[in-house]
Length: 251
Ligand SMILES: CC(C)(COP(=O)(O)OP(=O)(O)OC[C@H]1O[C@@H](n2cnc3c(N)ncnc32)[C@H](O)[C@@H]1OP(=O)(O)O)[C@@H](O)C(=O)NCCC(=O)NCCS
Image 1 (cartoon, rainbow, N blue to C red):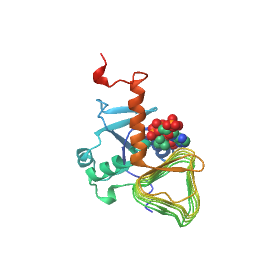
Image 2: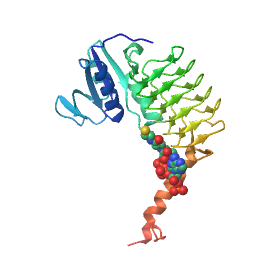
Image 3: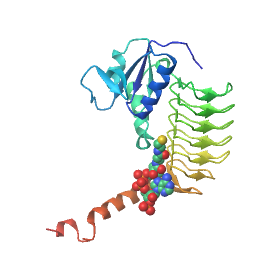
Image 4: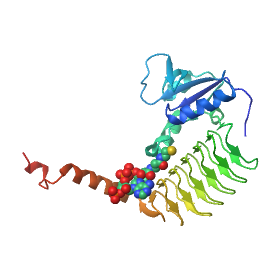
């Protein structure tokens, strides 16, 4: 893992709570490191932005241009990562930016524990209180939120996110582009298929096929398409209320 003592500039792609946590961690170690934030909307006009009391440079929208304009010695981190972003959005941003691999940084909070035999890939973010055990593998752009736990031999593959308190027991594998919700527990040796989302507090006891949603204790697996279709149905019936006539038949 690369761990130079000082970085000339860190660019955070996403101005969310994740970014705030990282800025605190960076500045706790070295208050002189320059941190620049980018967001999706270009919502800050001025050159400086106040993020949770940190006065930072604003670098503009997250796009290929913002990367091209960054100094050559700037390193990047993808901090976008809410449950709704878990699958395609983060992947799309990385693809669109097409940054040289060496431009991605690894952020490891000073208060995280990472065993020396753990493999941590570029772009990974390991926040305060996270534990990364022996012989684990943390893929590119994985985010381990505070107090998440990756036990010995477990894997969190590319772009996946472990929310606060999520626990991967020994030898379990979370596939690519997954979101594991707060305090979810994955039983030892269990495989979570790519693109799946594990709800907050779920306990996953058996293998999960790709593109699934799992909620509850023990975890109940629903194919993502079915989950989304059910949600759409509930939303439509909610808007109808007690009036069950076709919208064209109403005044
Ligand atoms: C699983 C999840 C992504 C589903 O989100 P969603 O698609 O917006 O689902 P909804 O909130 O509309 O809920 C749909 C149904 O699933 C149930 N449900 C949702 N999440 C659940 C969970 N974690 N455990 C049990 N049931 C859950 C709801 O009660 C609802 O049931 P109903 O249809 O019987 O009323 C979300 O609830 C979740 O757990 N996200 C993780 C949040 C998190 O950990 N954040 C961490 C920040 S550090």
